[in-house]
Amino acid sequence: MPAGGSRWTLPRYLELVGWLTVALVGLLTLTQTLGWTGTRAIAVVQALTPYIGVLLVPIALIALWRHRLTLATTSAAIGLGILLLAAPLAFPDARPDPAAGTVGLRIASVNLLYTNDRIDDVARMLETLAPDVIVFNEYTPEHQAALQHSPLADAYTYRIDRSGSGGGGVAVWSRPSVIVGDHPDTYNYSLDLVVKGPDTDIRLLAIHMPTPLDSFDNWQRDLHTAARIGREATSPTMIVGDINSSYWHPDFRELLDAGFVDAHTANGKGFSTSWPTDRIVPAFVRLDHALTTEGLVATHIDDFEIPGSDHRGFVVTVAPTR
Image 1 (cartoon, rainbow, N blue to C red):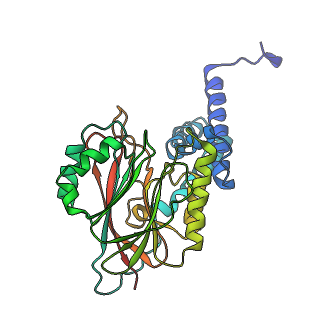
Image 2: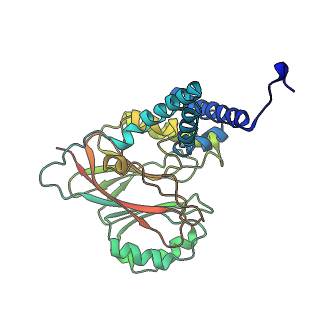
Image 3: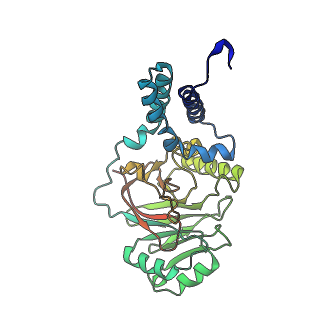
């Protein structure tokens, strides 16, 4: 029996569990506030921040009902911190207007999944969507052969392929002409090129970053490389692909601080998700992004299901700003 004769009743055990949960969520929120992702485990948990934060709601309500005001107040304060962090997703900055008379460039992002054997279905879907540019991730030699023998290849004269084993391959298929630059120093294959769009030339970085579980150091390095590109951009620039990070990763928010704007957030879809689409659980995180720098605006964006893949794709329309 504890000192003083007090007993550990069920309510007291539940209160202890409540405090432990609040402490763990508080530590997670602190890593967000400090912008610190120290390990791969923390990176994984950070992606789940909004879902873990929901645990605070019943704890705060039950604590209030049980007159545990300190626990209720602490839970509410941490929850408010998470809500403030999420505010830019719910209330994004106003988009600049596109320049008058612009046509816009439609770019599709397609993570094929390296084991995907439904490439004919993917090709037919892309024929229907008919984007101006397609960015493929997880692009294998088998995918390359199947797509190049499909009717889709006839519509895209400019094809830059860097197929690879596993999930490392990338390709850009374009109707407008492109100028290919140097291959960026990234963990997976990536492409840095200029698309001769109908309104203006656009620098496009097509990339597939590793997951923090696969290679934590290279994941951070690739994100920092992308942030540097944003800070140094002197012409309209965008990044498209599977970045394997979400808004809830401080390293991803470094991209936003570097001058990039997330197209989903700018179009009121900041809480949308893209992975996984092949599991029992519904998609719960957005890993696939279109990011634009000053001089470009994403005027429209739509998600779509990719046959045989574990990701949702999207088509984004970008135009020069007024």
